[in-house]
Image (tube, rainbow, N blue to C red; front, side):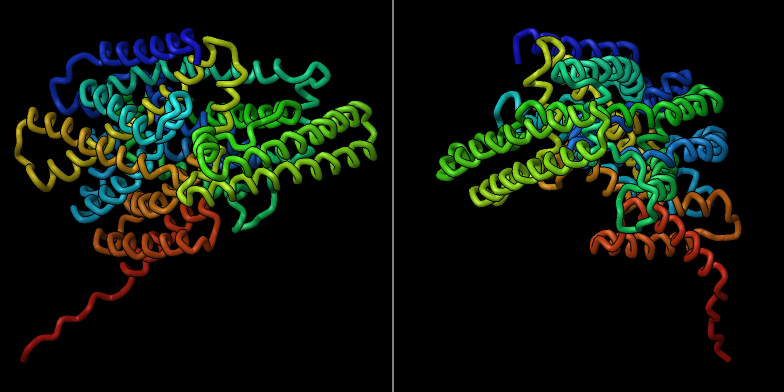
Length: 566
């Protein structure tokens, strides 16, 4: 990066963090630290909810996901508006009425302490692991720019977020997220516009999208009902609905965001705002990835986007073979570029026979280039079995650093940093609140002073920060980060959601029944996920339904008779 980019990056991040800490003021008690005195307006709530979900993973991995797999991931969000409606009707008024700090407090009032503790524990596991993934995402950027191992950048970034979250608490998180989302919207719009500007003069926006469609990248909606297919209209509407309902309704990282609303109405408006904006936002982010794909049909992409891994193999004994493959790849790309231009000409001619022929020729050329790339990846694995062979997380970053003008590179990288900081800070705040309110305050030290709980919240933030950084150091082995974080959530969210549905609607089922059902369900869901028996989005629906059914059956069974001595 240029000096201008470094200055833009540093000033943007410093301004956001300073503003958030200044606006948050000094935290005097646990209410201020965890829920910001429940004083924020609806637009704060809405943007904070969006920023918590839209981590660096969204802006790094989503374009890479679309580049390699097309637009179909957007179906993942189709259940979101329905989930927001259910939340506004049911969850929000109950949580506000009870004045809870965490969602799990309600479960003890409805069931018992062991059910509250179990759901808290499940949340802590899921959120602790997934937060590690969100910390790892921006460390990819620094490691690429500075050409150092991601372990060092992961520790650095994680430490910065822990420090300002410990100091500022929930208000610092919310105020920084307000500015973060404003800058993010601006930056991503500029990035999309510049991708279109950088296309060849003979290729319009419409032409590029038509070509991407012919290459299978404009697959927005899949109507087939296929349980093994991860992204279809049905998995998005049904599985996605259960996942989003559980995420926004029972995950403390999100519940904590709308509990900061000054009233039920303000929290509801914030969630409705999220439901209306999230799908178009995600569609546009994925569309940027498709446009980058179109751009790379006319401009040679790297054979492998993760330049750290490329530099490692070029230092090894396999360097000569890798360089030979790289020259082959260049030749294959030149052939592909010719075919891409022929397809554009055929599209402009509107002759279906020419279009079909050119489409076939381009796919053949693309297959040839892809085969060479796979041979290079195999060589990397031969050199280092631990090498990261999935480079989709680097696609957009590579494009930004190579083709965008000075200043804008720094701004876009700042956006990815800010997104990571916002979602990570929210997660750490929620992990601390759950640990203190549901475990420490309720079980370990129920009669301590408010200052003691405030100090415990800060210590819990540091503790979970260390755990999440440790998880982030492992995250390079799990492939596409966007899929990984949602897949991880699908193992647990359905079970937690099922417990809450029973709590809200099935008044005759007691705590012991739902506790037992949750444990049985979690074992079944983890088994299904481990053996990859079904697309992961369906695990959310299966988990919720199983908890309800099993808890109902246990409640209906007659109590065991106790033998009486005569």
